[in-house]
Structures are given as structure tokens and as C-alpha cells.
Length: 203
Image (cartoon, rainbow, N blue to C red):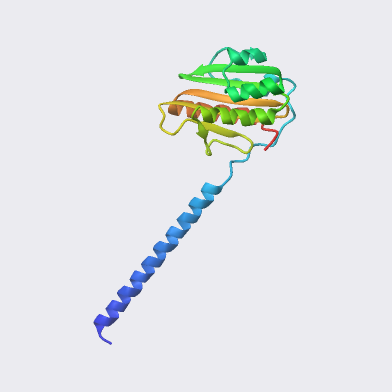
């Protein structure tokens, strides 16, 4: 066998080996991508006992305090801004108690709400439907089990993030709005503190 033939065979074998390695690498990458893409939201902490009253269900938002305290159902149509589909559910199911805590930090406005209602599950679903009508989309990276987070599309100069979840007979809402990165970071930090204080009672 000539040296040229042997060299050609070695080159062919080497080429096949390189192709196999590349294909295996692509397969591993694709598998990792699919596993990450199909992974569910991160686990939330285990549920804690129900808070004695709504003020204890919410953390204090960071920054300069804004309008806060108890409010009645009628305020949802005037001074308290929540998605209209959620207001409709609360009107139908009844809202026996409502507390809000607001603040402003680094141009980011924060609002936290605890609402006692006869149908908290429906109120949470209505919140999601309402913010989607306003252009927000589900954010998989920020969401937790039992807590779907919605936000403005990536790259928006002015951003808004929000989430609602069931806490026994309450709905807890966490929202931020402001410059994109700042609103994102403040929302994440505030939601983490809120979930640590009062994790969702339903997943």
C-alpha cells in the first residue's frame, strides 16, 4: 500500500472523528437547551401559617414611603390602580379587607397589596389576564412555583413588573415600574423578601 493511500485513509479517519465529536457536542448542547427551556419555575419556600391580618402579609418596600394603609373596594376604582379584570372579580367575589404599601426608590415606584376576597384564585387569574392586556408577558426567569411574574418586553426603557399569588383567603400583589434595569432589580429583591415573609399557600 502506497504512503499516499495510507495518508488519505488517516486524513479520512481524522475527518470522521472530528465530525462525530462536533455532532456529539451539538447533541449535548441541544439537550441542555431543551431541559432548561422545559424546566418549570423555581420552587417557592414552604407555606407558612396565615398572617393574623393583612398588614402582616406584606414586607415594607424600600425607599421613600408613599400612600399606604387600609383601603376599601371603592378605592380600586379611584386611588388604587389594579387591572380592571381583577377589580371586576373582587367586586363580584367581595373584598372584605385591603391593605397597600407603596414607596419610591431610585425612580422606581413600588406597590404591594394584600386583599382578602371570597375567590382569591379567580382574582389571581384575572390579574394575569389584565396585565397581559396591558402588554406585559410572563417572565420565566423571575417566576416561582405558584407565583407567575409578568413584565414588559426585554429592552423597554420604562419597565413594569408585577405578580399576584394566593395566600390563603388573600391575594398578594407585588408591582414595580420605572427605568428598565432598576425596575427589574428592585422587583426581584422585593419579591424575594415578600416570598420569604409570606410564601404562596397554593402552587
